[in-house]
Image (cartoon, rainbow, N blue to C red):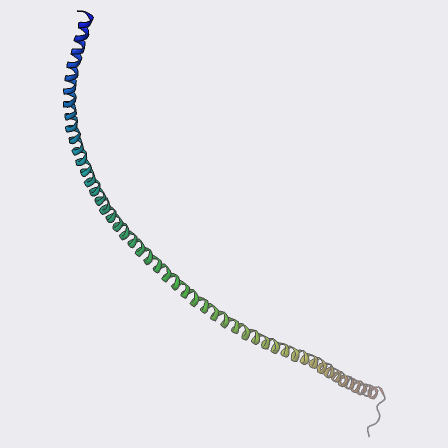
Length: 188
């Protein structure tokens, strides 16, 4: 084969292959268009399913969120209720303790005031008793002084009388001695 023939054969083969390719390209184009249409339908269906799925998921999520929200709201309400009860109980106990403390303080204050009055009375009584003891002591001391003075006066009087009696006894003794020592005189 010569080059012209081979060129013609190549051209002819090319033309045939172009026809085949052209026919095949059209077939492929038709297939691709069909496939593209199917893909578009499939994508449209997928989008539709995805939209429905997303809506269902959002709806389900919203329902779950609402349920969780309601459950959490109930739990918060329960916790608030329990806290309120504990709070009220604590404050009631606190009020009772304050009231009890006030009563105790009042009782102690009254007791203290009574003790203070009793102490003042006792102090006054002690002062009076002490004054009475002082008065008695003063009287006793005065009586002792008077007794001592009286005893001294009495002693002085007794001593004076004793001296008088001793003097009288001495005179009497002296007279009797003289009488016995002198010769006896005839009795008259």
